[in-house]
Length: 620
Image 1 (cartoon, rainbow, N blue to C red):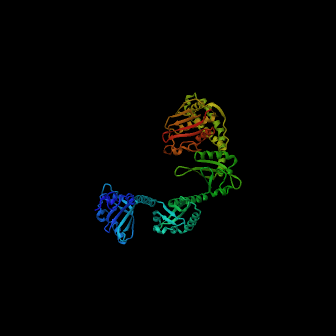
Image 2 (cartoon, rainbow, N blue to C red):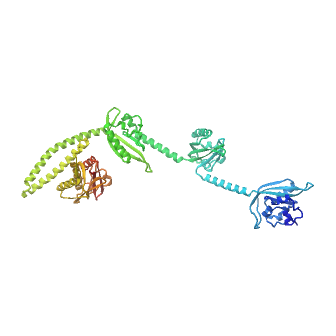
Image 3 (cartoon, helix red, strand yellow):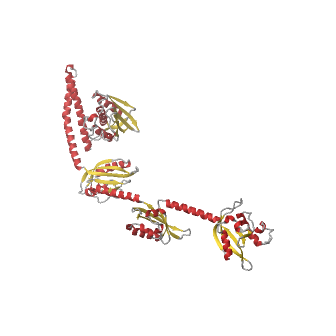
């Protein structure tokens, strides 16, 4: 039996010269080296690496099957016997050699092994030389690469987007599972130009020609087309591909993706259909319909425009609201109102004269409302206009009649009032004529109401015709409000009017017209609070404006009606559908007077709990 020193070639071995330089190199080599004698494979020689792998307790002169039982079933012994029997080298690659349980064992190593027959001087095989190169690190790297590749493939296959690669000749070399699932055909069916078979015939020529054009220009590929799915449905996809280059700059093909855009295409088609329906409806409507974008410029006009006005197409050059058609006397007013509404995203309505195809000007009532997207983003305006020339003509006739009738009524009313005042003075000290005094007082009160109605009608007529004049002067607003409160208080015994002021302020305005506004607010508060006995009026100054607020505790106004109360001829109804007396013009007249003083009017109210009417105007 050989000693351990004899097996490893260390000093003390009788069969191997200790001074053999070659033997020392073999023994110290990092790769495996061993000599198996005879067909049974007695281990006659082994280097340090071999012994460390299988343990230092290897028994020499034992057959290899007994000395290395852990290699059973790995073709290790069979390869040695094959090399011995044939006299030909045997090579194996990436063979796993696992050691025993020794504490110094290195488990799970992989080697490229060479089994080389050793011949004696007579040319007869006497044993087999085993050499091995450790490739464990390469195997580990290959495993990591394989795991990463599998992870990437799993991620790609799990993606809802179809991915593909193309070689430098334009043929498909890879498609992921998503594309296969869409088409229901095996992987091989899509390679080369096979993918084009699944494009619907109507799109195929367009898709292939654009594919070839992009490919030979080395440009990014981007095209939408339809694919026939395995379930028989048509699916829209957006294909995008980019040319792929090696680090050397060499072109090697394309890499790209196909995204399912069916829902987007359906939405786009629905939008197109919706726009088409809108255009058909708009073109058939007998009114002027227009749309703008966010920049105020017109984006759509229906056919009625070309029929009504000398306009063949949408105006260019930043024109707003087709301003070249507006009468020169109305242009500034209309565009100012348009821009103000646009900047605040508010609804607007304007009446103005517009040029027609016959060269005449006709009155148009134009309304615009803001367009808002589902996400709340302002998109522009949509509006409509109607020919209101006939209405305007009737209104002029009506206003002329109201003005003439009101003026003619004032003369007899004035005479009647004078005689009533005379009779009241005559009989005021005669207690025996109480019934006569009461009758005269009632008649006087009704004449006052009639006078106010006639005055309001005249004012409306003047406002409509632009003939309402204002006589501006500087005065203390507190004094006017106080005097007006006292005058109105004399006409009513059912309500107490309480005036409070936070400060004293002066204004530059028409004294009589401001008194008229206060009167209209107070009489309105008294009329619409029949079950209460108090009206409050307050004066204060905020941000350079005097604010007068008249508060009642009457029927109140619902939110839906509050924006209408300052309209002409509008009246609020009370309980049980009771309609209060009056023409519904008092608040309209008051609002117009305030607006002509660069002020504003508004109301705060709650149904059945009363209202607070406000008007404001600049402080002097």
